[in-house]
Amino acid sequence: ALNTQPEVGLARLLGAVVRETLMQGGAACLPRFPHAGLSAAFVDPALARLRALGAELRTGCRVAGLAIEDGRVVSLRLPDAPLRLGPGESVVLAVPPWVAGDMLPGLSVPDAFEAIVNIHFRLAAPPGPAGFVGLIGGTVEWVFVKEGHVSVTISAANRLADRPADVLAATAWPEVRAALDLPADLAEMPPWRVVREKRATFAATAEQERRRPGPRVGLANLALAGDWTATGLPATIEGAIRSGRRAAQTILSS
Image (cartoon, rainbow, N blue to C red):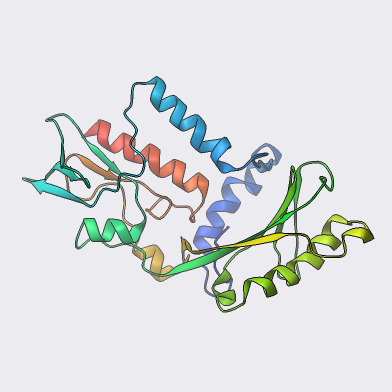
């Protein structure tokens, strides 16, 4: 849950996860996983909902900065021309912490991060029904079975920063075979791809926790959102959703 080595991870954040799952009973501990990826599970439905509500969506359009006057955001700096805000319009700034720090000088944001490594193995046939399994005692921590491929996740992966991709794949595949009890004809490693997210989450330490801001940043029409803000949870999808709700409440109550 913390994506941080246990020796330095903040117990309070782990405790929040335990209180909201294990201590709530079985109904709160049902694992959920996407069959076809996170985009199909979260992004596509969200975009469809926004379009249905009449929202204008601009992709590939980086916001380079904010223009601020009299304690309010008055425009967004876009590549082609500034986008001016009307008197009743507000901004939910949902960007990575290092981007938020550049846009809002003086804002305290997490500045230490942990990586996540994902390795995808392509298979000619599914090795079994869709699902996932957790592993201990090896390099791989989670194995996800999907249609046509198997994916593995390795958390707190800064320690593997210098490990070559082919070495990572060769290390993971025997663990995958053992975990899924794959037949002998799959002894040879199938086609693979290693994806490293170098700044996947903030490091869930006491020092970084103190750097997490709340949704309010002293601007009347702006609220922060992101799993790195002060949600009471580590950097998780649940924390991101909570931050979005708090940002919306902040805007609506201002």
